[in-house]
Image (spheres, rainbow, N blue to C red):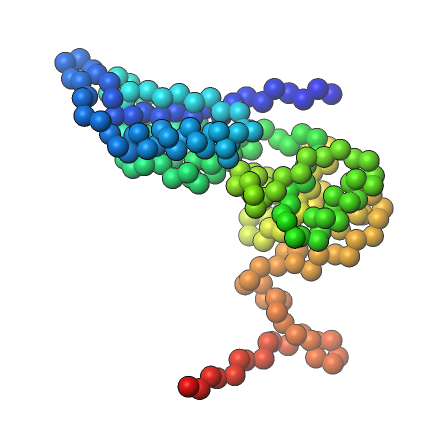
Amino acid sequence: MAKRTPKPVRLRMYKWEGSWGPFTITLPCGECALTEDVIEATLANELAHVPVEFECKPWLSYWWEPIASGGWHAPIILVGNKVIAQGDALNRGVLTEMVVRAYAKSHPVEGNKVFGKPNCPYCVKAKELLDEAGVDYEYLDVVENPAAMYEMLVRVKPEIGEFTPVTTPQIWIDGKHVGGADELGEMLQTHVEPDPRRGQGSMSPTRNHRRDEKGKKRMPAPSRPRYT
């Protein structure tokens, strides 16, 4: 089945320019110029693989449009119909996150995807399993590519639960979430030692607990006081 052409995310900017009736803006806006540069650089880099339809308008000539979404202080940035920033220079990370979030929510995963990171043995194992099985897949490095990290988080949280810590890899096969390398191994009927980090966070009650000689959990030993 051929892949569907993805619908682009609508990104709009209203900058401190334009005219309305007898009024005309003549003073330049430094925040607007900086925001426009940030948008162009982000679209060319972090969001290069995300379809985005960007439109920049003079605020005073179209002042009524952003007001419907709560935008009144230029520069105003909207993703879809949601204001993500106004009145100040745009944060690059916020732009990347909100565009990817909008894209991921309206475009389900198609085909095979692996979200991973360098120096992750389970990511290496997952790629080895797929290569050995002759499965074509797209690998996304969540450390090198911020957009990939945001996409992974947006897509995996509905699958594992909002408060479950996210580990790598996160794998989709034929558009369906599989899980990590151990779940992939089960699907391919290959044993993979389960990842002990799965579902664990820094506040997990079982994290860093030790076991006594009978295998019972006990709390970590308190640190010794330091004297100076």
